[in-house]
Image (cartoon, rainbow, N blue to C red; front, side):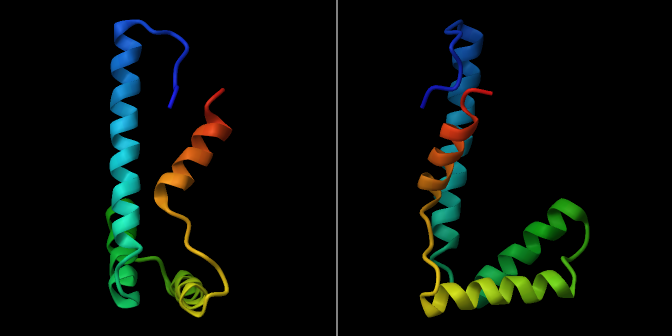
Length: 95
């Protein structure tokens, strides 16, 4: 994964740090996708509270439940976290 064209020691360190964080986030996402519906809902709620200091509200609760139902019914397929981050890197890599 190439993040910077500048290969100075400082930028190499930044790239390594970024790659570590993205790899770790991908691993966490993949693990989270293996949780039960109820556990994923609790995780999303806890993350929202940690980011925004409040729960997501009823509209997001319904959206989350709909998305989980779509996954469980096979109407959509889960994408491994690593694939998501790779696509993001490809799209944003030049910016």
